[in-house]
Image (cartoon, rainbow, N blue to C red; front, side):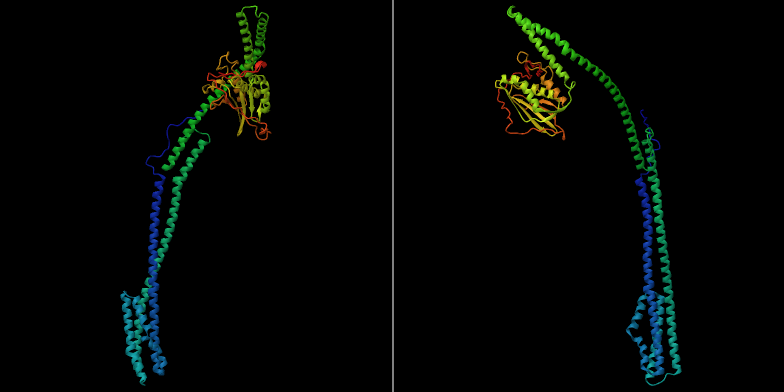
Length: 569
């Protein structure tokens, strides 16, 4: 049953629907901008953390350590001066040398370099330096000189030195408080930036995860669900519901794919309708063929009945006519006038030719219908049999027949003998002035054998190459060459019955050459190939006879043996 085709599209998206590519481009662009912003913030914070870490570690922690070492050196120097005042031992004065050592000066320079630009620390460092210099120049050096002169330090001098060093200690304390406060502030700023960086990383990770989830949901909504819906629609069609229209929803690409699937469904429905119509036509043709086969079978039965009648009932009165005409010819020859004798001779000749024509028609009709079955046949034996049948004609014409070694093929031996006999008989009949020479050739070509029958006779014009194989067609009158015009038509039917082909080689200009093919024996069938014995093989004839330029004819003459002629026009 023809499935109806829907005429419209249902559920198709409007022309303003964004394509999947455009949706993904916009979505990925937005995600890219957000991720880039978060990465940029994280990178900025990372650089700030690194910078602030450098401030905390390389600046303030170094300044604290350096100032502490410097103050410890000052304490050691103050202790050394007091110890020297008590012991008068010069060894105890060794720490006082730190005030004039390069390392002591380098520490001060380091502090100035690290704290440059910070007014509070610079002022506190300068104040501490002044008080340290004041203790060293106003008390430490004079006290050492005084003790070296042998004078002991008075209690008043010791108290004055203690007051100066306490002032130095206060300057260091003030500087240390400012420096520690700066370090703590820098450390707090570093911790804040680290917290911000950590928060930025967390936010970025969460944002990326959220973007991935959003992308999954978008793909699920834009791609997976529409494709799944299109798949369900398609499965409904493939399950047999060809009248179901395929509907696709979603992005433009999905709807276009659905449109293509729908177009394919419509095409399938159209083709199915055509197939159904063709099936009906085939069924009608099959019924017609069955009827024709029945008619053909009935016609074949009628033809068989006709053949029986032709071979028995028609030949019986024909034989009587011929017999009585011959009796008249023998008994009354010379007793009647010359015209009566001529009429009797015409009647006898007509009866004989009619009998020969009936026999040829019967033989032509039996090919392929009355068969002995295919068997392995030695073509050399077939050729020898044909030559035996034609021996009177060969002897009377002075002809020579040569042949290549011939193979074994599958076929019907009597029919293959008939082919050789008709072709060689035609070559002997349609000869020129020279004695006829005929050569039978055989060549293997893959799975077939190609044979040829070449003679030096009068030849055939190329324009008659197809006409000569038509039954009853003659190229000569009956008075010039005898025959019924069935010989080559019979050869064609026999060769085609053996699944071969026969034709006249129009490229040959001297004499006539006929070629035909037969299937070769398949492997394993014990095909006997011809033995190429150079000593026993005759060479082909030299076709040097004059060719008659008149209208040619081809037929076989087998004499009084009752075999079939083979002349075609």
